[in-house]
Image (cartoon, rainbow, N blue to C red):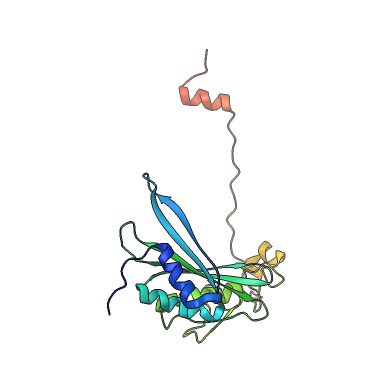
Length: 212
């Protein structure tokens, strides 16, 4: 397969607008300076319909196979936003771009298709978002919990900002939530009192004597 020539950030956005049209809700470029010389680098942000997530990633793969970074997320109130962060032209000096595809899921339908059939390395990040946001990744090859213990309460999602998020009493004694009654309390080492040394006395010890 012939590689697509190196494209500018605007050329990439133009390709997406031409192919996906009204399915793109936002497309923008941000510029940042890297290093002492503030070498220009670019981030491409494209927000698409949920149904266009996989076609959008496939399009990027057609341009040049991307490097997957992570899936980020945010609770926006009535929606959960997922940000799929990749980079294209990876390893090209001064020519690599970060490309972020954003989708928004209404809390009444928190489903999103897996992208592991395209990028297997996305699996851990997909599992994390299921645990911490309560989304459902359809066709995920391994949907087991990864970060939260098996006895963590069902229906509680630590990164949510609504009533399904972490309760105040859980933050106070998080170790105790759902803990078996016969399990001993974790040992907490006793803190030693801190002895405060007055500034003048400290100066005497440091210099070997009081100032004249």
